[in-house]
Image 1 (cartoon, one colour):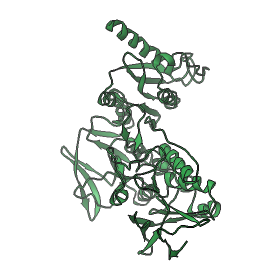
Image 2: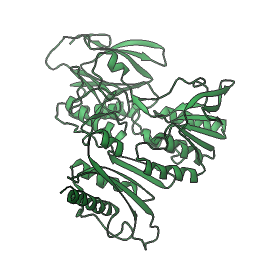
Image 3: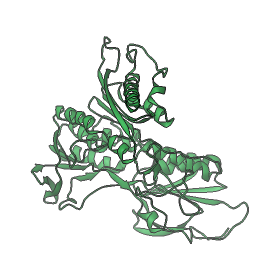
Length: 476
């Protein structure tokens, strides 16, 4: 097979020739795909090259708030594998500070910019994985480019924020947006001793929860002395000497020495879209169950790729590392010559604010209604351990259940230690399309240090089934 510089010439084929896999994006999805492909094909059969525009490969982005909050002290503990480790142990050439700026599908070439050398070159590929992740939402506010304004997406962002806090000693932090990242960063700043304010256009933090559950999160944040300004839209940021000094909403001006954006993210699909690869209704790259895109030999995985929601039966864009790792695994196995599929997601996620654990899976009320379900909801209160056992704490469980059939559609849990991971039982029930009647007799573990004799999940299922039975009786 002929090559011109680093470029494989399209159309040149031959037996026994080395193929080339290029990974765009060096975190969970991309590098999992790379390592899975390598396990099935050695370097003589498949050359693997990865390009990452940031400073790090293969790290835990979910650990960023805990690194900023100094709960995780050492940066190295968040990094799963360095570029050097990929080269030494996996025969994968991982390049950081390299940005892919263009994909030419016809020529099977990429344009790559070396950000440190300020140079560009062309790279060829036989197989391509687009794992470009997601981009933080950042409105075009006046003053939005001031020093001290940070998005939170990649590990480099976390390093920059922690460095700013360590060196600039800010006294007042404003977090804009109350999603997972927003509440976790608010807590991180609080742990670092800052005065913290969170601003959100919504009426509650954590809009992935129903309002009755989200209000509990708001109350706990206020109890932590975090100021909440809800139902307020940011209009601009004020700066002084190029450095952020305040956040301005339609109602007030909030002094700030550091501003963190927690407005959510959107799939980073610009590269794929410009190449003519199909983008779906949820804004992500369209993939099939094997993670193949609309372009031959091109795969996509992670936050940039759409997922199929197993409950709503719709395409969704849910940016979670759990999905990225699984999707990357599927893509890598298929590129390596195996066969694997990714069936979809149910949207399971957990977070925490101080000692309040928050978890959800499936559909909340508005999502169930939007998907066309006729449903009912139940909310139950219980305890994380036997009521008499030391350390027992309240736990609130909400279920969204289809009327008539009693099929579980979604669940939310709020409580203290031992609460959140119970969502996994409910996620498993969702995955298997179980009804709350079928859940009643699940053989869950019991001992006083871990649960009441009737686990909160079973109590919630029992109450929901009672409502379903009453509905059936009324209808008949």
